[in-house]
Each structure stands twice: as C-alpha cells, then as structure tokens.
Image 1 (cartoon, rainbow, N blue to C red):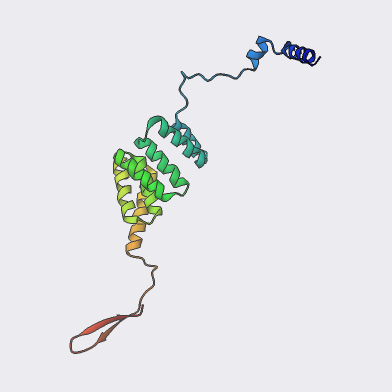
Image 2: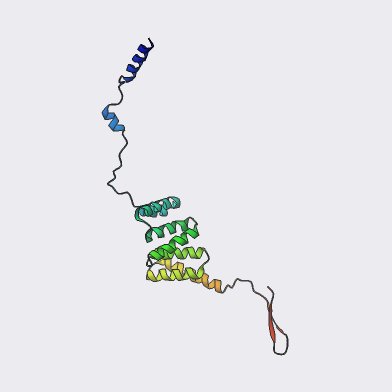
Length: 185
C-alpha cells in the first residue's frame, strides 16, 4: 500500500501545473549585456562627478578609468585632483608628481601640484611649480595667474613677515671697540 501511495505522489509531482508559457518566460528574462558596446569613459564620468561635488564617487570612476586606460598622465592628474579635494594631501602630492613626470607639459597637473604644495606649506616649491604652469599656459589662464600671485605673496611674506613679533635688541659696549648685540628671546 505504501508503494502505491508513493508512486501516486511521484506521478502527481511530475504532472504539469500550467507554469509559464514560453512568451512569459521571455518577457521576464533579464536583459543580457551587449559586450560589443563600450561603456562610458571612467575619466569623463569622474570629471562630471567632480563638478557635482561627489568626490568619493569620482574617485571610483577615476579608478575605473585607470583600470581601462592604465596609469596615464591624465589618470594620475585626475586621481591627484580628487585626492586633493578629499583632503588627502600626501596621496595627492605623490600622484600629481607622477603626473608631472609622465607629462611635463600638463598644465592642470602643474597647477594642482602647486595647490597641494601651498596647502602643505611648501611655498617656495609651490611658487616654482605655478611659474612653470603659467609658462606652459602662456599666461592665458586667470586661475593659474591668481595662484601664482598668491604663491608669490605668501612666499614673500614668509621671508619678511611684518606681523612677526618684534624683538628688543640692545647694543652693549664691552671693552675698547668691542660691542655685543643682545636680544630678549
């Protein structure tokens, strides 16, 4: 008897319950990705995300661009720029130095490297980098001109700071013809 019940149950399980028709299966099937089409360039997406202020997403897009194109000067410059925006100055400086080395004529890489150097307090080097960017750009960019003027002003202020504390100096005579300059530090 048990065999008969088991057999009937198995036959019932094999019976068609109506299921989906082939048209319904085709309609509900996921769309296949067309491998012949090329996706949107990661650098382009990253630039648009940078404009929108989405720096973490831009970093991901730039990394995707690096995977697609390799570590070109443009990719290095873009990665350095987004790291600058994220406040990662050490990483930004390293990447932008590599970008400048890979393409010594890259104006954006020079400009952004100058900005990083200014932020890190390396005023003399920043001034030199901005001068290089200004020369490469033939002086046509207002933002580079402003950055250069700011670097010049800050580096001059660092050499001669009028707001620094004044020290009291005194010239004291010791012996015949010998003088000593004393200060209170």
